[in-house]
Image 1: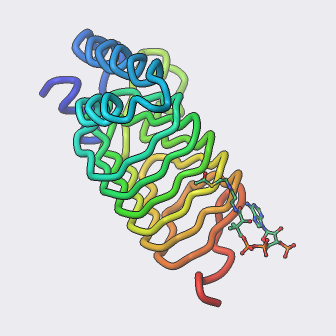
Image 2: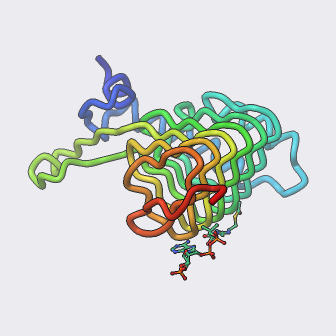
Length: 185
Ligand SMILES: CC(=O)SCCNC(=O)CCNC(=O)[C@H](O)C(C)(C)COP(=O)(O)OP(=O)(O)OC[C@H]1O[C@@H](n2cnc3c(N)ncnc32)[C@H](O)[C@@H]1OP(=O)(O)O
């Protein structure tokens, strides 16, 4: 099993593996090109986003800058608006549904390191996927932690740190992010 296979499978892997380092260099080259485009270079941005992501639906609007670790682990539906400064550590799969709004300065972290300092000093990582359903609105300055699933039609309040999965049709806020009410209450 390669370090990449282990990473995708959620197993422990060496983060400095040369193949992974090279993949991250390639992604950074691509992301730098995307971040260098002017706001009217829509076609060029669409082509580069298609190259970057594992799956990229229609009508994807992403403000720059973006910060992406691998890219090919990110699967986007259609009709998605992502505001400034989206940071994604996609060591595992990140899935985003259709009709999703993501506020500025929002971070998706699939990556963990061991709590034990001796293991962590060996530059070990492991990851869990993040899944965002359809028709979700994520406010600004939200952090989503490894393994979180946000159900369809949820609203996540600005500044939330989402440590646990959120059931569909929920407004959830805070650090740690907790359900506040049902969407139609
Ligand atoms: C795609 C883009 O670019 S989005 C642009 C960025 N915009 C944003 O990030 C705005 C995000 N919006 C929010 O955070 C909103 O507060 C929402 C949608 C979560 C909730 O809105 P509402 O249902 O109208 O909630 P309302 O304002 O009535 O507040 C209800 C309670 O929740 C609290 N609350 C609301 N939002 C938050 C929050 N983000 N964090 C913590 N508490 C919150 C309020 O203080 C209030 O508590 P209280 O009753 O004790 O006073």
